[in-house]
Length: 463
Image (tube, rainbow, N blue to C red; front, side, top):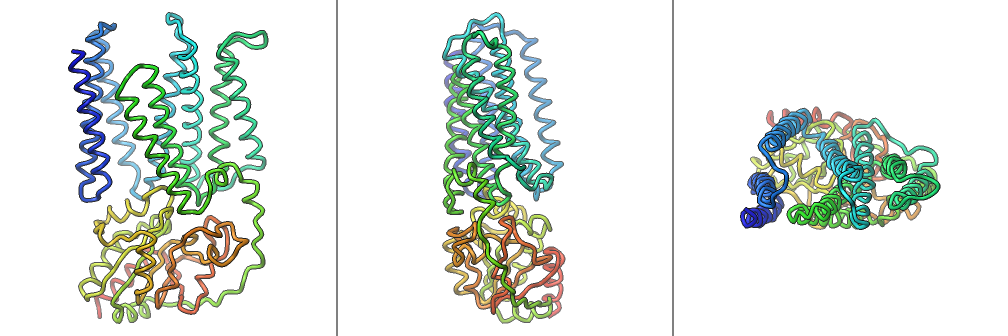
């Protein structure tokens, strides 16, 4: 049975690795998802078989309990997933990530308070790390969930100071939990560590601005991977260690990519909230706003040979991705080339826009990254900006006092004409004016993204 368990772990690792490779290709993503599910099933079965072979306290009642809990988890997870619309995918990711952190924290909590097990110093350190990081990840993910849902918008006064204070208190209680002392007993120290860890996660996540949410989600995902590795070390479970390394490495890579795309350091995003609030903006310029209509846009589209579409969070809110797909197909029928240009941090999580466009069956070949997108824009006759703001804001290139200065942007102004579909002239999450709205080749179409696109499609069909 031990040999069976080891072979099971080997196959499970292969399924996970191949599944992750497949997930990187939209055409094979569904197969990748199936392989990941198969890998998880193989890992669970192998672990049960391995434990039975090692002569651990294993019986059918325990097996039935495990199976019952697995079924409950699968049913609950499926129901929760289907209750979230595709536009709320970032919230769902944060929610499930939080559950993962809570699970790791509770494992550490229960293991620390077992009275029939003598824990070594190294085991105590591992479990305390699991408890600290687990509760921090859970509370941080819940804050991210509420921020993404619009229930939390601004950091609290003194947030940065409270974050450092709770981190310091977590460190003190962590050390006091390792051995008895005259000031506080171990059990109380562990309880306080759990409380301070939860508080630290809240302040850590709450200090992150809305525009930086993709980075926060990447970090929290990476922490969940680290937690899995820590739990795997404690339980001496090979597959948990390997999976934790997979997820942790993915989180680190994504975080680096997101920071690079925003031209911000990790420290500036998470530990510099006080400075972010006092950037000198200067007086707002009076923009020469030119309004347009669906009829005027259709007239331009009939003459265009290349059209670029830049989606943003507003597209997700309006659920206009399928209207984009319909417009694209209609223009393709007129021999007009259409490409979607996506900024790495567009939306509220890594790959947010990719998920939305994939849900609308838009071919991956028609989606361009930042560099190729800017090259395409230079050749475009018309560019649609749908719900995007900060990622196209030219202040990042021209205004040294801007909080987004230096961030690579989608250079929509390179197109011959730019049409911005937006409800109003309101600022993005960076809360700064967007000069693109008043450029000579720009015009504003004030409407809901879905309604506006459907109106354009209808009039285009009548031509």
